[in-house]
Length: 259
Image 1: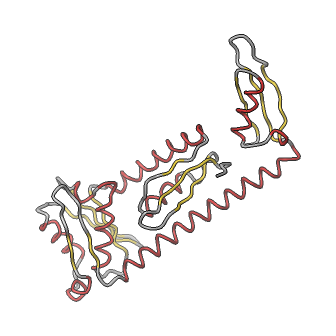
Image 2: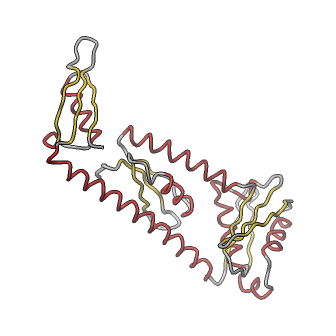
Image 3: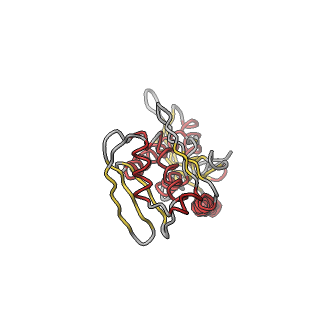
């Protein structure tokens, strides 16, 4: 953004408001008074980055864009490393947390010796929890997807999908498969993705309007990636992840924001 209109109770305030939106200094801009204001009327100005300063601000914009792309790339690499680490762990534990605190534990070594199939493992888990569900399988070049549908399956999803993600990691760890298994319950992943995209748009509007960054609670790598991608073409904001797994979180802030 190289120009911005600003309004205020007087010309000076209008200029300050426009400079704030541009994240620019007064010496780098040209100012045009559109309305001097007066009784019951607000002053209005047009503030534009001066020609001799445009290169600096365009360079800053390109730098921010490069940093954002690198962050998305690093996020994908991080998610892949986490998946590989989980697959190599000798034992896997999955805890399904409900009001009655369901716990499912199994030894990876024992399951590999039995060559446990995904459908059988899922059915055993359902039986242990006294749940009934229809298991539907689809497959493409990279993934084998299993969707569970039925009644009273919310406990398998958990808060923001925590139990579902844990159960998916567990299944991948104990069942030998040449493709990654993606587990879903009542198409939660599709609904969650749409929810996150809508949330990302609302947060971007809030950040752009307030000029203040927004910090999300810790998220699964796949969910952080959804928000990164949802906002990658938004010219007003940029995203960055901080922290260490599993408490890694995402921040949305104005592109010109300076800590």
